[in-house]
Image 1 (cartoon, rainbow, N blue to C red):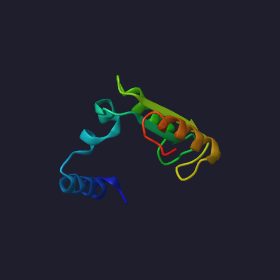
Image 2 (image 1 turned 90 degrees about the horizontal axis):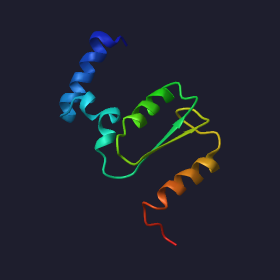
Image 3 (image 1 turned 90 degrees about the vertical axis):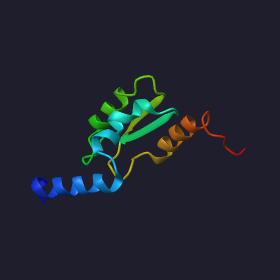
Image 4 (image 1 turned 135 degrees about the horizontal axis):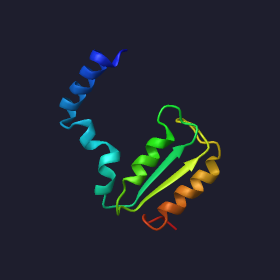
Length: 100
């Protein structure tokens, strides 16, 4: 489907439904406003959302406590699930009360 005019019209319709412009709610523009720790996990071989986008979001974190984990994998799956799970649990341990 061509972006102009169909995709453009769909985006304007969705913005109207959600009550916000995409550029106002995009993570690259809003991450710095977060008041809690943020974890971004991104696959290095993601061909849908390039890793450069995750890096750009992370760079705009300002003083926000944000962590970016880059790992081998695509948009749908990471290669070393055990290692990623360990990194996620390490991130969560100090910020979430985990049952003993």
